[in-house]
Length: 76
Image 1 (cartoon, rainbow, N blue to C red):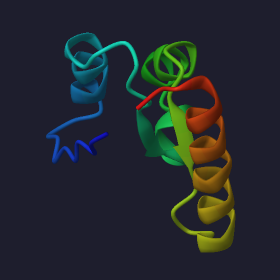
Image 2: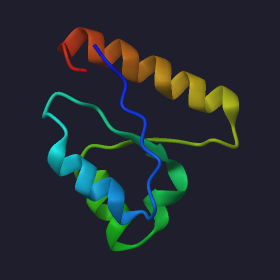
Image 3: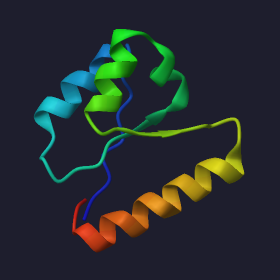
Image 4: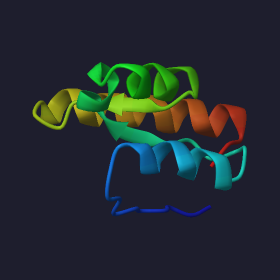
């Protein structure tokens, strides 16, 4: 298992990363990207998990749920 942390320059970088990362990786992005028009739709369709960084408790619960799902489905 591993964690890839990316310091990207624009919201479009996330779409490029989805193409080069292995299929078993689960991308996580800030919730604000969901509302960026076509980029948000493409991210949502790509299976990105969105977290709300302003609500720490909600972000932690989403990450915990994602971790449980990842373990049960054997994905990174």
